[in-house]
Length: 220
Image: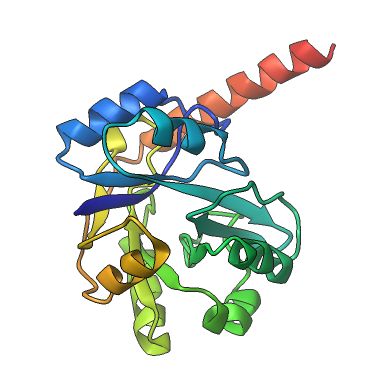
């Protein structure tokens, strides 16, 4: 099964993909499953799991007090701005899995602080070794090197915020129906990654600006 492990829907303020567009893109790109990892919410992932004709892993890209973590196989939303330790605890309470997204991307202020990454590496399941939105491929290579040195499983994802990015990166596993089966499949460390065009970041900035503007009107 080809599974894109990092992507966003309109439930993220900086993304433009509807759930229907994600389904169509997944089928067009030949993916067998995906993990929807919206920022600080699982609302879209739960709905996508209900309507999609393929398996959907309910995920969340969570902004902790020290940078982002991704939780997979979630049943309940994990609130943002908790400590990384508390965030990990809440994911584990649900039987979920934990990944560190884009750990060495030099342009992302949201990345997990490096001292926290080093201290908590043994508590996470996987490291995102390829993120299609990383501008510099060296940042992905640093993530791969870190994962290899620490003996961590590999994650890869498009980090798609638009339908055209879906499937730029994915892992290959035999089964993603349960956390245990999924982890077993990741042992093969098979993944594929292609870099997105740098212009996709402009789309995200525009989407976020529009969301902020709408929010300002609603509060006024």
